[in-house]
Image (cartoon, rainbow, N blue to C red):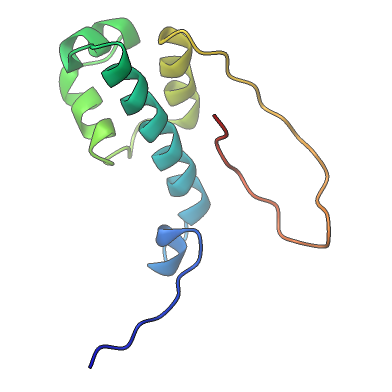
Length: 104
């Protein structure tokens, strides 16, 4: 019988990645970008032209291969898709560790 372990809220941390917080943030941004591309009925070629990147780079980003694409670049993609992007900094409560996240 298989043993089941509960994971954290970050699969990258569960896999032992040193850049887990960055990877999770990029995954959240890519998910939002993907949702908006679909909602606007854009092709990857259309999105690439809108973002000023190649179709191959858009395809890679949407498949979770976002090494070489900065969080800033991904936020600029969201702006190009007609979204406002806000960065909110607020104090921690209860002594927890700080985190980065995307709220939509």
